[in-house]
Length: 261
Ligand code: ADP
Ligand code: MG
Image (cartoon, protein in one colour):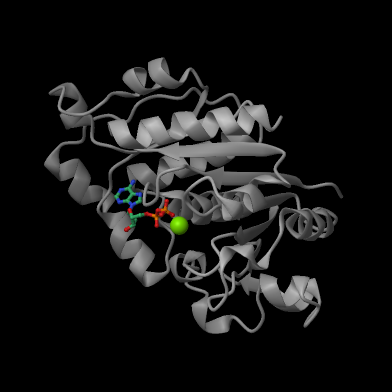
């Protein structure tokens, strides 16, 4: 098997990389893919928490590259959906603990067994970002409808292209349709005008994401929420389905109520 490595990055921190990695990973597994999500944010790890797997970690990626265990032993299986695994980050080490070459080696081994390898990149453009980028076959850049996030995304997209890893695709996260309508928030058109990058999906602001993350239940497991549904469409688009990208529609209060569990 030769899997595809997808790196999820952003430049700016806190825009939704970990949320996107967890949800796209779960969605791909729900679609029958054999998936591993790799926490590339060494030192800060939180993909395990968002996925609800933190209590089951024994070894991590640093143990793998430093030969304290085999790759298989470090993988934590998510028993809720099909074939989904987590390769956790170390909490007590810094981002230099895994080199880009080591990440490439780990991903090569993972690609022999998995269809999709998703890497949750740390913020910034330093060492940890380079490590997460090195094995990528495809790169998703997450941004929010804010000028600072868009500017950082622009910078990162440039670096990705200059390293021959482009063209990156853009995931616009936390759009609030009502605020876009009132012109209080950048629209997806504003963003794509600045970035001239193709868009893989537009995820609405959804307060249920915070609760879902705290409970370790990625929102895509709740098929009723607009954010969960868009993460599922993003997974389908990644698999090549021609699903048009549309901005989220404005929901009435009762539709929002209905979308919660
Ligand atoms: P990053 O990994 O880029 O630092 P996270 O995925 O940890 O970002 O998200 C940062 C915060 O934003 C978290 O508290 C998360 O729950 C919240 N968040 C992410 N996406 C959304 C969304 N679409 N709607 C509401 N909150 C969101
Ligand atoms: Mg993160």
